[in-house]
Image (cartoon, rainbow, N blue to C red; front, side):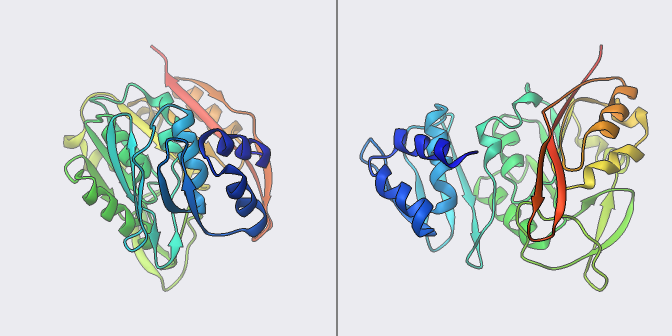
Length: 295
C-alpha cells in the first residue's frame, strides 16, 4: 500500500493524524500515542497504527483498544467479539492481522467446517477461523519462536479446544532441521543442519492422522513463503477432499493453478506483484490463488 493511502486512512481515524504522519514517516518511531476521533488514547507499536485505522474504516470496530507494554498483548474488539493477541516477544514485533481485514473471506462459510491453516505464524489466522465458528482448526508453524507465541495466543483467547497447533512444516512427509531463530512473517522454511528437528507433514498425512477431528467441509489456507509448491506432490484424490482453497503464492501461480484445475477445481488468481527482497536479493512473483471445487 502506498504511503499516501496510509496517511489518508490515518487522517480519517485519528485526531492527532498530523503528528502521527510526521512520526510515522519522518522520525521512524516504534511507539506512538494515538488519539481516536472518539477521544480514546493509547500507546501502541508502529505496526498497529494502520491496522487500527483499517479496523475502524472497515466497520469491524469503533474503539475499545488496549495494548499492554509489559506483556506485549494487544486487545481489540472485532465484530462484537474481543480478540487478544500477543504481538511482542523479546522486544520484537511479530504478527500480521490481515486475517481480520478480509484476506481469507473467500473461505466463507467457515462456520461448522474444518480449516487446515498452513503458515499459522502466531495463530492470528487460526484465531480468525475459530471466532468465525470453525468446527476445528489445525495449524502448522515450523519456527519455535512463532509457535510458542501461537500457543500463548490460543490460550489467552480460550480456544484450546478449537485450535490444534502443530510445531511442524508442510511438505513431503519426513523430518527437517530448522534454525531456532526469532522468526517473523515472511520467514522461509529452510533446512538448517544441527537445528531443531520437526516433522514435515503432507496434506495426506494430516488428513489421515486427524480424520476424527474433521467435520463439515474441509477448507485450506496456505501462506508459507514458498512451501506451497509442495502441493504439486499431493495426490489429486486428497485435494478433492477440500471444498475451498486459498494460497498465497511466492514464485508464480501457473503450476499451482494447473494442479488444482486437474484436481477438479475452478481457479482464480490475483495479478502477480513482482518485488525483490533486498536482504536476500530473492525475486518474488507474489499474489493469491483461489480455488473452489466444482460440483
